Amino acid sequence: MKQVIPSLLIGLNNSIIIVVCLYLILSDDISFQERGIYAGSSILFWMGVQRLIRKLSNSKS
Image 1: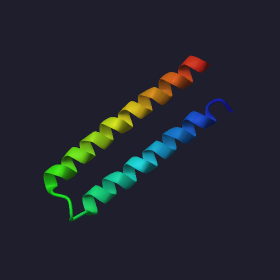
Image 2: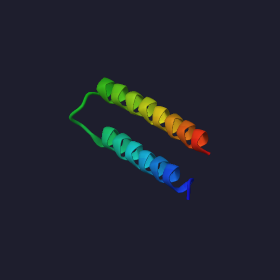
Image 3: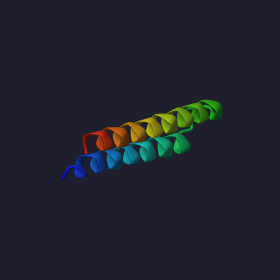
Image 4: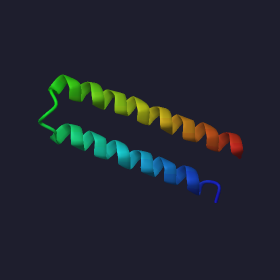
């Protein structure tokens, strides 16, 4: 049960990053450079959230 909540948070985080990246790929109203900046920022945010979830789940067990 303790592993279910971190797994759900990681799954939600992965789903959100996939939706953001697909939006950036398919979007025509944003320039190419801005899409690259937004995609890079969202991937860095995704990596940070993954690390935070793993650290918090390891510290509780």
